[in-house]
Amino acid sequence: MRRIILVRHGALQRDRHILVGQKDLPLSSLGRAQMQALAQSWPDCLWQEIVCVFTSDLSRCVESAQILLRNHPDLLLRREPALREISLGQWEGLDKHAIQSQWPGGYLMRGLDLETFVPPNGESFRALKRRSLSCLKRLRALYPEGTLCLLTHAGIIRVLLAVQRKLPLDQILRIPVEYASWTVLAI
Image (cartoon, rainbow, N blue to C red; front, top):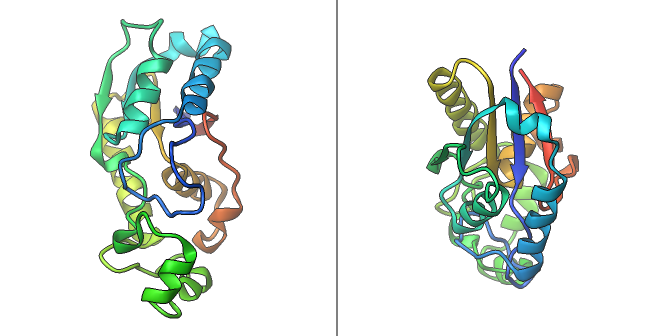
């Protein structure tokens, strides 16, 4: 069994009612504090196992990774675009009411078919699953030994946990993934 440590970035600077997706929003001051607290509470034994930290290339993850690794400059940090959040296409930056106004029935359809529904110019959770698993396979091939740390987004983490737990994708939003949290994936 290999261990992959999945870490979600800290809280964002945003209106909490908008859909974010791949919109490149920065960490909030709360998000920075959350990541600092995580860095301070991180078990030393895990740091010793990690051979590389991969982060989404979105600024909220890059900054979160930099905070987390501040006391571990010897660890390699690599940006990985495939670790980006699910793309919500034209829905990114909009709230539920704006989406319902511009795409009548679309928001409801997504809720009824989380696995295959694709927002305009976005991607489905099924596509996110393919992207996540392909990325994980590639990263594991690059580093066949040791523990990898992936600093990423709730969507990616939920998809990987759903695969591990053999859950259908239409139930992934039931998997709690808090800001600045970490989970060990054993695969």
